[in-house]
Image (cartoon, rainbow, N blue to C red; front, side):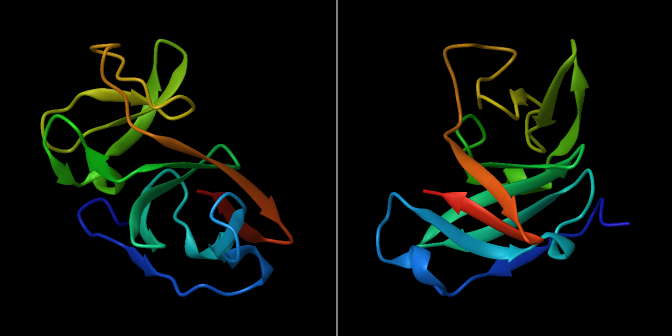
Length: 126
């Protein structure tokens, strides 16, 4: 449905979690995410790529360090060698959704962020 479109969530701080940068930030409702696809969110001026896969939410930086562009939310998600991954839409490197490590060159990684789902709300810890 959204393979070629880009979904964006523009978020304004709300809730109690916005006082401390190291706390979880409520970013959206689970229903705002697309199963097996990415959505970009702007949280505290950071572009974050959110992926909802296998009933879990993964959060990575939206910045592709090889392609040098904010495009990771447009990547295709899947399984490679038993690991959940997202493929960069630019040069097709595979990044582990859990660790952010590039599966094609372990010297390269994308920052990841802890997530949680509470009462159908998605929270990300920056």
